[in-house]
Amino acid sequence: MTVLSSSPSSANATARCTGSPRRPRVRTARSGVLLLVLAVTLSAFGVGCSDHSETTTEVDGAEPAGIGKEVTMPIPAVTTTVVEAGAEPKSALRPALESGTTQQVTLRTEHHFEQQIDQQAVHDVSPPSITIPLSAEAGTDGVELTLGNVTSPDPNLAKALLPADGSRAGFDITELGAITALRMAPKPATSDAARAALEQAFYQAVYQSIAFPDAAIGEGAVWTVRQQVSGTVPLEQVTTATLTHREGNQCTIQLDVVQTPKVNVWQLPNQAGQLEIVDYLMHGTGTITVDLGLPLPVSGTVTIGGNQTYRDPHTAVTVRQTQRTEVAWGD
Image (tube, rainbow, N blue to C red; front, side):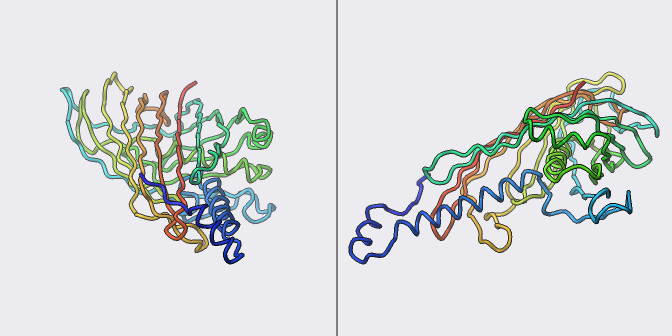
């Protein structure tokens, strides 16, 4: 790909002839784009955060507005298609959750993100990883979650997460296992930084979950799950799932994930302009083990990553991003 940029020699020549400070204006424009895109990047790690509608339910009426309340974030619907039905015996995969069933499991998320403007230095703006011990309980329409002592290797975030111990969350789930809503109710003392980190982690987990097909399948079955991923750039995500092993209620599923943009431009917030999407590649793989009788995955890891290139159509400034997200379930 050819990177377009302003010519320093031309700018110098113009400045010498007219006295016009061309180079400072180019640097200022590029710095503005850099700061804006970095700000958008940092605010967009919680994928879908800016695009969902919210409903709130009072938890503690004595707290200020927005504090101590449950926030419900709808998740886009999924479409499943069977590619291969697999070997005999075949049966329909369905969550078989009895109300009151409990499970202890740990969710760990890690997100690596680097960004470069033209030939400037690469900026690593990766948020810290976090580990969330969860107590899950099956309800009539989904899963209720209680957060344990959430930790992070970053000391500042680790300290901010301390008040979140005992916070509540939850998933609304269809009979095919698709998550239709994420509910969050952090403890009132939880800071904005800690809330954002928790929301990001749960969004990553939601979009790397799996829904079952509405058909009988056996070992070796392959199906696809299509879903729109909300965010600063709307994406279509296609997950190809393969049932590699089943023993009773326990299923091992191999995942292959591809994300492609649904638009040709990245619309920056607050009518700040747009960036052309020059190229966009996001691909991931992983394996998870689920027990149809338990609310959450038993174990497994899914990693998705890739590279994107954007260009400002007015200044020809090029923005390159490299990112990788890992979601892991286990003890």
